[in-house]
Length: 202
Image (tube, rainbow, N blue to C red; front, side, top):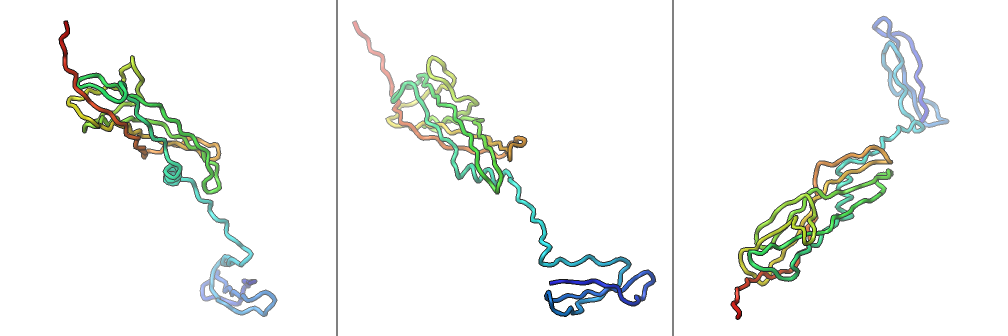
């Protein structure tokens, strides 16, 4: 379509001009579409050749979290000492490996770097109790994470869940930390809790 705005004759208000808008298929006679009175020319209407510039969508924290959930955060295996079985009222040591999560992905046409870091470890002893630490614990002789069972059981299922905080950057820009935390549930282990009885020997 081609259009034309041209001045014409007189308007009721001083200083105004009557403007007429003509349009029609290219190569065909123009048709009067509308008229109006104004002090300045009205804006030229958009024609098929005038394509508005689309606003590029932005990478948001919600989009990044959706991508992280799709990829999946590392879940942790709990390590127990002594392994397999322990004793009532005995220091049972829990520990695990510190997880690593770094990815570079393409989102909405951007290159996005994502890092997830462990902030909290939640230790579920399998007897209805739990505790939280900021560190993954260490094996014996360290006793960073210790639990004492108070009753016997043939099968408790301790595990450790890890809570992550995610940060990201777009096209090598500044890092942005996401407030919402994500938690990955760990794999349960099998542990028997037994009671030791003193025995006198000669």
